[in-house]
Image 1 (cartoon, rainbow, N blue to C red):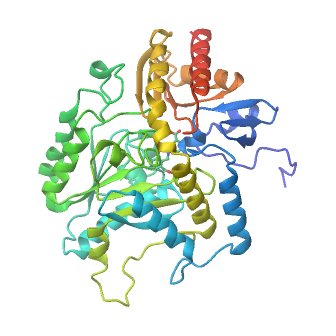
Image 2: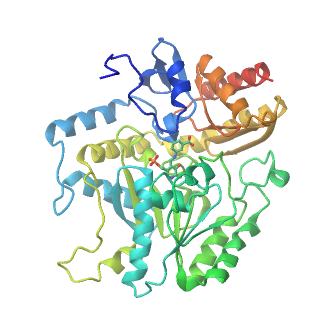
Image 3: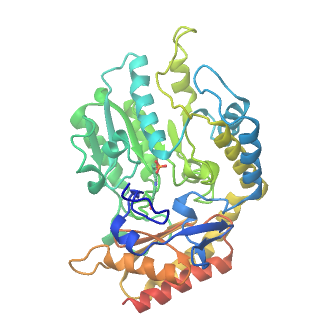
Amino acid sequence: MSNSSANNLDAFWMPFTANRQFKSNPRMLVDAKDMHYTNAEGQKILDGTAGLWCCNAGHGRPQIVEAVSKQIAKMDYAPAFQMGHPKAFELAARLSAMMPNGLDHVFFTNSGSESVDTALKIALAYHQARGEGSRTRLIGRERGYHGVGFGGISVGGIVTNRKHFGTLLAGVDHMPHTHLPEKNSFSRGIPEYGTELADELERIVTLHDASTIAAVIVEPVAGSTGVILPPKGYLERLRKICSKHGILLIFDEVITGFGRLGSAFATDYFGVQPDMITMAKGLTSGAIPMGAVVCSKDIYDTFMDAPENTIELFHGFTYSGHPVAAAAGLATLDIYKEEGLFERANALAPYWEDALHSLKDCPNVIDLRNLGLIGAIELESIPGKPTARAFEAFLKCYEKGVLIRTTGDIIALSPPLIAEKKHVDQIFDTIRTVLGEIA
Ligand code: PXG
């Protein structure tokens, strides 16, 4: 018992965190309401990141708290295999109704990573069920983030998330990312150049042959690696190439889902329909862990071709469609609808865009990118010290009461969709001050 003190921070191995650095100067959040956190020192911190891109309805929403409390008291858990409970079915039906026509079957998970690995497995099993079992390759993209499961890191394109973990999944290839700063810097919204990068998929298909490829997975807007936007017409072109070659297209909407772009999902925003959508985060506004994969009717029907008394898909989690998570999901969808939060995000987006791009003249800013209520500020790295400048900005913004997120030397912003203009002003005023101070 080396660490018995209640205040000892040693035992908790924190995820994606410099543990020793954090523990030497911890930043503890103890309270949250609407747009703000409160830290252990009693300071209010404006949430510029919706937690980790997840608390889209803001914090401490009484409707969600009540739904969760009621459900946990009524029935805490029900077995997920060969048994059901009404709220999981209700939530699946509600989600399906939010989707474009033809995307109408929902498989529940507990996180984005589980959603991604589930979708990849469904893609493989789908082709096998159709007698095309040779389609085993999965195609992702450089700088893609699809969580931390073995499937997700294999199709993902983040070197640090891959290089320590052995050989990963076999038979994966990657398209190039679409970050073209020399051509698209300081674009407002969707960038003009780079559509032809989608044709790299044709090259990959030619190399491996379509008969070996099961699925392509992309984030419609890449979030984690610093907000990389799809060039005009790029996603449409990916869709065309996939359809032409019988390859399933998966949109990973863990970040773009639930109003982040000012529409329900990125599929609506771009008018491009994938065969599967992975989601998590905003599904419960971050209140209870939950994820989902929404599949096309064609995929679901293919599995349902099997004899009626057989299990069609040998996959699932103890907590798939957990009653408390389902209750949180239903209450969250109610809030989105009743408060028109997706429309609200859409209405605020131009103000957000102007405020972000007003930072153009700040020291060391080399690019600004935005879409919906997402913003990215790319900073010139300090020579020999990548990530140091952005991390200092993060610490200084926190000291001044604004939570931002950084990746490399990019500041990524994604406030709750309940944000008001005054919050937008505070976020960008604080960043402006900080960029001046650390210049
Ligand atoms: N796919 C995408 C597109 C994501 O953004 C995941 C899958 C994995 O979700 P889970 O629930 O397993 O973490 C994500 C997660 C950041 C940041 O700072 C982004 C994520 C998670 C934590 C931090 O950009 N995205």
